[in-house]
Every structure is written in structure tokens, then in C-alpha cells.
Length: 380
Image 1: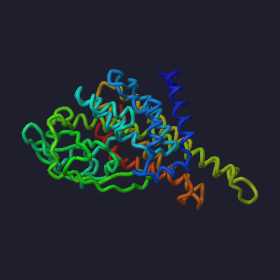
Image 2: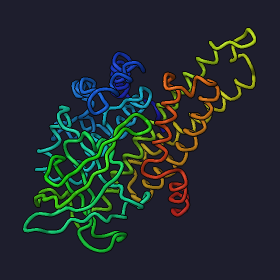
Image 3: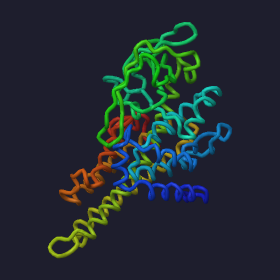
Image 4: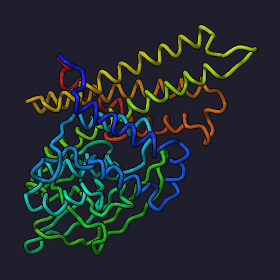
């Protein structure tokens, strides 16, 4: 099996690495956090100019027809730079719903805006006490004429404060935990009856709690079958999990590099602390954890081409387990090896650990995904 990048993929990696090196050092990131919405519209525009927002979309829709490996390359780079911009929420998740379930009209209406950077998305899925169950949906969508009326509450909606369009899961029939009767709807964020309460999250990103009160949308708002949307939701969320695994690898990689640099320069007892064998062993253990995470991230990425939906889901769950374990270990070791400075806001190392912690708890934590792998009978 060939794990080497193609020439085009290497050029993509060089392109985004160069862009973020020029635009996204840690001081710049702190400035972007203070901008309206908590991220840089200028950087978002640069991502659009380089075609990075159009990577996964079909050429017929104005994109580049790239695959999961290209998304992995981009997400690793975003993780290294701790990028705040809503690539995951808009391109991976929003774009994923449109690519896999959108009608020709929906694609024509929304994809060009994603590609040129003029439109961002948010996925409103999480509900009170639902934990990580994608089929636990109490928000309702009831028929009214040819359209729908949506009522309910969603919580911790990533980019929900800033998005132009919300992708909302809502129940069209059945009970709250029934696997059928779930629809996916496109809702303008400024629609009458939509109330958003935004706030920063621990990793520096922004989210919102959103209330839908008698929100009316047309028949064309439903993505796919409004009574059988769970399979679409699961597919897109697994793609988001895979993308976050790659982002986490980037964050872990940079955490390790920063920690090794610190060990080489920080002196105690007249010598660099990196000369102490015990600390060298810790750094070696961090490297092993990173490579384990990288391997599982690649495995989840390759699983995008698996024929079996069950095998794809199990591969992603297994990757998320390893990412959670490696992320926690590398994050904790990085801070401890930095000493007291690792706990300060001024040091970037703690911000990597915050992002890794948020990734570990988004769309299912380590224990949740370990149960998924176990229930599936393992990877074999």
C-alpha cells in the first residue's frame, strides 16, 4: 500500500503550509480572536483565493473534485496553526450535506458561496441530554402547506453565532429516539423565529445555543428524504470526525515540536533540560503516541473508500479512540515539560491542549467510540 503523497497533494501541502506560515503565527491568531465573530475574514478570503474552500466539491459544482486525502492534508495544516476559521463547520460538514444529499437546486444555491468564501454554515444537531446519539432528536419539523415549521433548541452549535445558513436536524415523525422520522433542513440564520446566543468555547472558537420558534421554511429546505435522514447525518458526521482526527494530528505534531524546542533551550543546573535522559524518554513516548495517532488518522481517511458503511464507521470510531488517547497524553506531557509557563495564556502550548480536548469530546468522546468499536466486533 502506497502512503506517499502524489505530486499534486505535495503541492497542496506546500501551498497551505506556506499560507499559514505567512498569515497565522500565534500572535496573529490572538489578533484574529478579537475580530468580530472570533476569526479573520481576510484569512478566510485567502483560503478561498487558493481554492481550498472548493476542494471537496465536484468540478460540475465549481470545485476541484478532491478526496479525503486532500481534506486530511488541509486539516492537519489547520491543526498545526490552531486556525479559528470555520473550515470544519462550513466546508466539511455543510459541504458534506450538500455533496451527499443536496438537490441540484440546493447545490447551485449554496456551493458557490462556500467556494468563494461569502457564505458559512453551522450544523445544529446537539440537544439537551442527547449526549452523542445522533438519532436523539426532539426538535420538530411539522408540515404546513408545502413547507415546514421548525420548533426546538440546539446547543453548542459550532460557528452558530456567525453562520449565514444553519443545517438543522429535526423530527418529522415518531418518538424522540426513533431512528426513522428524522429530517435535515437548510434554515437561513436570519429567518424569523431563530434566536442565537453566541459565546466563545474553551479552545478559542465560537459556538451558539439556538432556539427555533415557529420557523417556517419551504419544501426545498429539506436535504434528501425528510423522514429518513439519519444515514446521511451519520455519514457526514463520520467525515467530520475523520477531518478532526487529521486536525488533531497537526496539533499534536506542533505540540511535540514546540516541546522538544523548549527542552533544547530551557536550562537548569547549567545545562539544557533536554540533556536529561528521563525527559528524552518522555519526548520519545510522545513521538510514539503521535505516530500511532497519525496511522489511525490515515486509516480513517482511507476508510472513506470502503464499500461497507459499517466498516467505514468502525474505522472512524477506532481512529477517534486513538486520537483521544494520544491527544490527552501529548497535551498533558507538553504542559508538564514546559513547567509553569505551559499553564499561561501567553504560551501557545496550552492552547493546543485545549483544542485537542475539544476535539476529543466533539461527536463522541473516547469511551463512546470504544463502545462503537466493541459493538461492531472490532476492526477485524
